Image 1 (cartoon, rainbow, N blue to C red):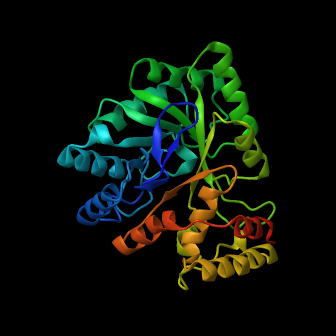
Image 2 (cartoon, rainbow, N blue to C red):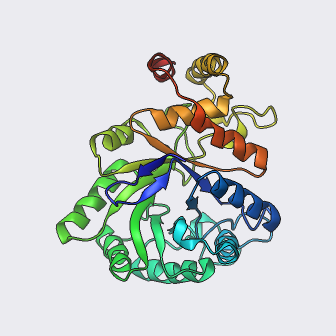
Length: 319
């Protein structure tokens, strides 16, 4: 599988990361193992999870995904071949709580969370550690110093952020630079081919916008990753209609061009979306998700599609 450099970390990651959100909960152990094995057999090595996955699923409280991955890594004996990413900041602090009670990014929360994640994952380090959701109630200096301490302790190789506004990312990186601390090398944001309506509200999730795309394009040391790139199946499934945040004339115009390019290439709409993200500027690494082997294979096969400059231009300028 194609490999990409993650920011300025020197870490090579697979062009498609595998999102493990429902593994160990909604997706049972047998199916989770099958999907993980299929991904690795295809040359993939970049696994994405979080300490709070998936507390909102029935019977779950968070940590289920990390536990499943820890079991799989132990059973397969392949930890050294895996680039393992997890996150901190969005785990509820009270039983039955939601994002209103999330742990945040204080030094105490970060230090407690990493030890819990390492224990569940059965490893003594993670390759990439994300600030999952911005915490405006904790000084950035405290957050960034805490992350730096983890890097210096060898518990974390590289740092990233998710669901952050661009100005907060830049401020955090400048603080780290002034103190010679480790800093964010990438951001994982909600991002897909369709553009949300102006002012669209996704709750705690933040969608990539033109400001962030420009920032990533002009900062070679900072990578962009996309979560929910396929909108939970909305591009192809009749039982998964578009979210209201994407219902617009702009979206319809882009869907028309997307369909045209799919017909020209022989690819599916999902595959064209993933190919567009990877082959556009800035290059975007997608975190894909699947609950069935055939879904995962469709996503993996997107790497075989090479869009022409004309197709990229039409996709980019549609709407």
